[in-house]
Image 1 (spheres, rainbow, N blue to C red):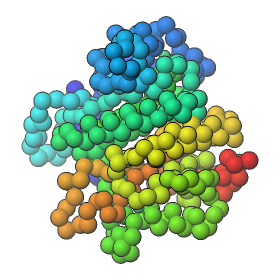
Image 2: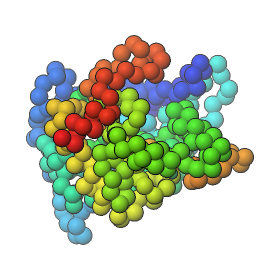
Image 3: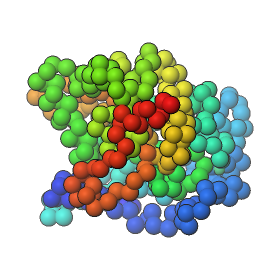
Length: 335
Ligand SMILES: [Zn+2]
Ligand SMILES: [Zn+2]
């Protein structure tokens, strides 16, 4: 079992997971991403090679291998669910057991496809499953925060070629999420508005970084993009919680995500990227003297291309150097 350790200097928690050492890596020699399909545990027919299935979408009465989306525990889980958590005594070296859940969502039957290659109807099913996993995991009161991420390409952290995403339930709210909540809450208390709703208005008014406006979403390269070609998908109707994703939003996202992943691939030579869903932590972590998190927090999705290496400056100061201004990124992505 892994262990969570708190850095007392920063308040950040670290997952110490010795077990993950030795997990497979299709890309260990920076070769072409063409892992062996026969031995791929995410292939239809290879279901017995994964830990027992958690969830799946398949036609009623269909065979086990006749799935369109499949969810399994991460074989090399960073955290694992346990019966209960014993409270650790106060210590100079704060730690807690690595209780959590680490799931893999297999998004396609096609080993070689990418986010940009997933057809709209399949992406719709995949988004349905994302939402279902958030609902299930956030209903478990051992978990305080759920992070969804999708790594595409070895430099973005993908160790398997087969298209998949990951969802990690944590027994705590990470300090970066707390910071984001604090900034949003302070803004709300001062302005009586949601900071993201206001930013949506500002970006639309400025009209320099907007990629697309649909009925449900604003797609932008954010003003202070930390990474070249960063893309944000902001729901235009205020909502703090990805679990409230409705059918209209899902239908639009099912087109928007593959579409902009393709544009990114065309404009920037298929960079590796991470796709992240930022959503609310469990609501009962809200202190009574603060406004309800639903008033001030606003969920969104971000694509972060990984074309530059995180170097010393970024590591030391969280201050990023981005050599592609978002205004230029918009020009190139919409060419
Ligand atoms: Zn595969
Ligand atoms: Zn809002």
